[in-house]
Length: 407
Image (cartoon, rainbow, N blue to C red; front, top):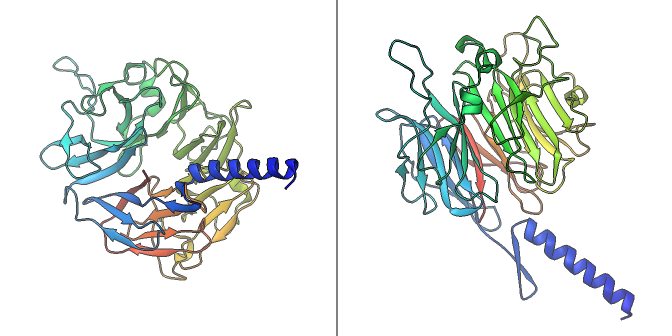
């Protein structure tokens, strides 16, 4: 073997090891071993953990966790894989957060759950109806979490979810009411703050989405905020050029290209290159018969040009079901310039389901696994980036969110 061939082989080996590390694989004696993974499922009647084997072919569902309680989000801490946080609304405790430090075996309620600041007697203050969204903080800040609520509020924990405080730069901002409008301007089950995104390069740089309100950005860890909605349609408003008042359903930032943002909005699918500062409606490239209305949007962990969406019927009366009862995911591999339908294995007719904004996720394997949960209680998965689908479990309650736990 020549020196150039040896150098080429070393480069390939290095590239392979890096790809294996990114995709959840480890090399042992020349063999590639995959770690098992789990899907953390939040539903209208409790939480569940769906555990898969290394091949992602066999799955086993757990007993229900907090059966009967509404769980909006459940998420593993990537900085501390033993820790999982759950946003729940319980009959006797109201809106709260639970924390597990043993991968979901035992749970403890937060000592001080997210709550708006109390106001003087006789005044009307904000009250958290439910905690809707959870986001781990920057890798440089272990123990930091953010939570979004209904009505729109932003909260921060610095002790792994034990205690929470409001982010005053948002909650107490004199512009807050103008940004979010009244309760009548929210979604059918209440206005929400969601899609809290931390720039992996800078813990002070935060994005968030609000239904209603729009996308906002902070450069000082939530101390101040500015709207980031230029180019985004607002078909339901008389003025299409408003700074805020939009309805993003899900916003994503790619960790390998933090300058790129994607958004599934009430009024279409968008991409933004942050330097340009304007949303481009890449959903215009979707098939016209299907449209570009939906709730979730999921990114490929290693390719900023690849994203998946799950369209729903957004015609005149907004039934929020699969167009014509024929569910399908769509994928772009060129940053939204074109889209491909992915429906192999899914029902061909009479499947009037919806996939909520948090109910679609991807793992980091190679090929990437893609998963979604439905309002009819099914979890579907693909081991080949959406080329084909299998139903992993049926007959769960109405599913609000799915997140992948890998390590």
